[in-house]
Image (cartoon, rainbow, N blue to C red; front, side, top):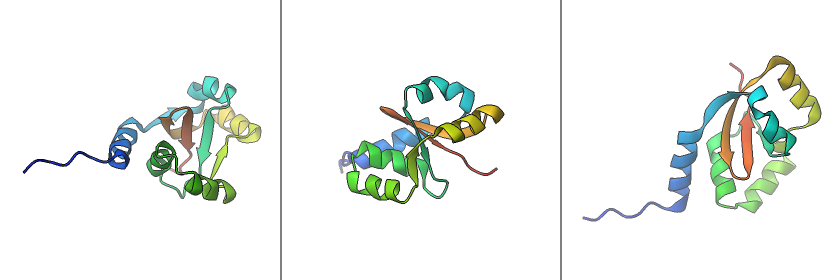
Length: 104
């Protein structure tokens, strides 16, 4: 029996999962300066957020934004992360770099 091709969501999930990694805030300064870094609430799944971005799920993003779960990294948070060179989980979902701080 022939295998069915994977759907876009499955492919995106696999790709983003393989690209998710820890990174220190200092290494993200160029992306932050360009306004490309978005913080994701710790109660969301980072990969799932990237997948929904890749699927252009506007309704879901509007809900997350309205709930304060997805937002650009603000200056105050960026400074705090810079001062301690915060380690974050990150994944690139062009044109954005999604980051998430998790308690360790």
